[in-house]
Length: 317
Image (cartoon, rainbow, N blue to C red; front, side):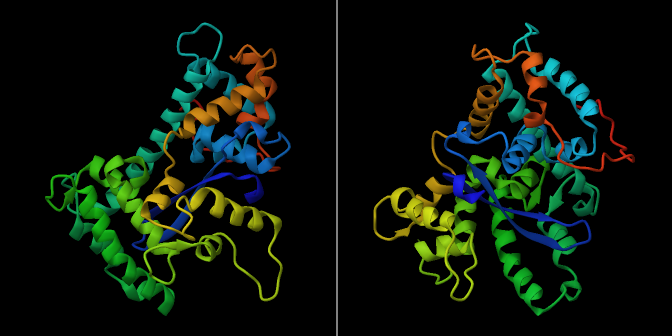
């Protein structure tokens, strides 16, 4: 999939496991500059669409449904997206829906882990509570490498926590803890996202990301093996679009432009893409029939097991 990507947003998200281990998980969220160029046969693209349109959790639920069940639920969702009930879905209505889904995912994620860290049940999570729940038992980590990694993460987590703690009381309310777990969603946290991205990729600790470091973050070279075509394309991307001042490396400002490009609205781009691919009469709007005709792009499952043990209320959306 990398060969068709022209804009990459590298968002460094540290979430936490309920059993006390932090999950050091780099999620490179990939956006395309021209979403309309994707082919409808590209299942990877479909998965991206599903998660953008439904949210990750709901996309997994839809993956367990039969095509008939998916279409039935999609029809109900379409009626909710059509906010003025005029029978047409505009790009703006679809954009608003995608933004809502994204926001819901973020806050649901925080709600799931809140009780694991609010140890004294005062509806706040102090740094000490978070540290106790996350780092109290380093011997539980699988090996020495894990222990080193988690010890390295402790000061990084503390730095991020202090940045999210807007009133400086060393305790995070719901909004502050959301900023801590999902810094990419908050303007005042974006410097931290840049800093953590730099620390992850800058292997020689010179304060910059050179071309080889940029490539190494997404591709592991095998001894003597040739680079695939998409890697050569990414090298061109680095020289043409990442290294803006042409000094052979990315500084903080260039990293910021790479992972958080200005004037790029993910929800707007995805909404335009979905409309473009499904608008059969080219009137710049979607009818319910047009959405259902292209249901596989919105919610269609590639799974063969349609999941007989679903427990989630299918009308939640």
